[in-house]
Amino acid sequence: MTTKLYYSSPKTDQWKTNITEIIEIAHGYDVILEETAFYPSGGGQPCDLGSIDGITVLDVYMDGNEVVHRLEHLPETSNVTCILDWTRRFDHMQQHSGQHLLSAICLELFQTKTVSFHMGIEHVTIDVDQPNLTNEQLIMIEEEVNRQIYQNRNIHPYFVTNEQLLSLPLVKPPKVTENVRIVEIEGIEYNACGGTHVAKTGEIGIIKILKGERLKDTTRIHFKCGLRALQEFQATMQITNALSEKFHTGRKDILDRFGKWEEELNQLHARIANLEEQNNSYLEKELLSETEGNIIKHIFSDKSLKELQKLAAKIAAEHHVIVLFATTAENKIVLTHDGSKTLSCGAFYKEHLPAFNGKGGGSPKSAQAGFSSNEDVLRFFQFVYKEIQQEIL
Ligand SMILES: [Zn+2]
Image: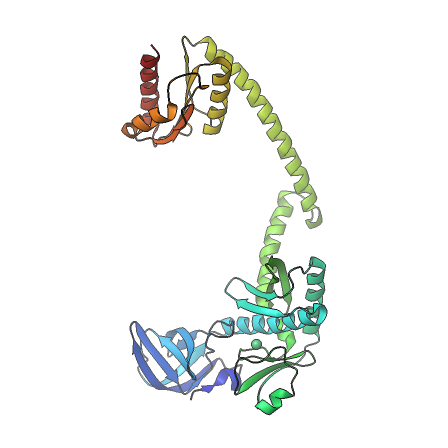
C-alpha cells in the first residue's frame, strides 16, 4: 500500500518515489506511487494538485485503500520526482483547520452542532443546527475563534485503537471503524478526521466570518481563513477606498453620504416625472392641433416604449382617437385606442408584422412591436397608418 506522506510528513512538498502501478484509461493514465503526499479528495476537502516528473496531476482520488493520481500521459521512467502545489495545499490546511476550530467554538458558546462543511474555490461554509444565530452571536464566535488562534494551540493528528477511541470525548462518532485518525486541538476538542491540518492554530492566521444565512433549520456560516481572509480584506478595502474617494469622505460616513445621495436621486426622479407630465400636456395639444380625423400619429426620436405607451393611453382615453406612435430610439411602435373602435390592434399586428420583420402583439385595445432597424419601423408605421385610414373611411 502507498505510504501516505500527507499523514507521516505533512509538510513534504517535494519527493522522489517509484510508480508501482499504471492503469490505462480513456483519456490518460491512473498511476499509483510507492509514497505520496498528494491528498485525495474526501471529507469535504478538495484534492491536492501538482506534478509528477513535470506532468500535471489532473486529479487525486481514493480507490479502496489506494491513492490514485490521474495524468494526461506517462513519465519516461518509473522513478519520478513529485512536486506538490503547496499554495493550494496550505490554503486547504488553513480552511480545514479553521473549520475545526470554528465548529468547536460554535458548540462551546451556543451548543450548536456542525451538520455539514463545504470547501470550494470561492466559498467555505459550515451549516450549524440552529436556524437563528444572530449577528451578535456570530461576532462573539468570531472573536473567540481568533482568540484561540492567538493561543497558538497544538493541533495533533494521530491514529488510535478501538479501545483508545472509547475513552475519547469525540464531537461525533467516526465514519470509519478501523484505523481511526484523531485530530486533537489541544484543550479544545477531539475530532475523527482524515484531512490535512496545520500544526498549530496560529498557522490558521485569522478566521473571518463573512455572513450567516438562514437555511431551513440551520444557519450557514460563510467564512474565510488565513490568506483567503486577507485577500477578502484587500478586495473589500479596494471597494471601500474607491467609494470613499467618490463620496469625498471617510469610511464611517460613506453610508450616510449614500443615504443623502439616494434621497437627492429620488427628488430628481420626482422632478423629472413632473416635467415629463408637463411636457406631455404640451405635446398632446400640439399633436391634436395638427390632426385631422380620428388618428393621432407621431414618430419620436428620443422616447422609450414605456413613455410611448403611457402617452398613447392617455390621449386615447381623453380624446377617443386611435393613437399610432413610433420611436426610432428603440425601434418600437405602439397602436392604441380606448375600446370604442372595432379595430383589434393585437390581431392586426399579428397578421402584418412578419412582412416587416417585426415582433410583438397585444390586446384588441393596444399592441406594441419591436423591429431590428429604423427602416422597418418607418415602413410599418406608414403601412399601419394607410391601412387604418382606409378601414375607418
Ligand atoms: Zn479535519
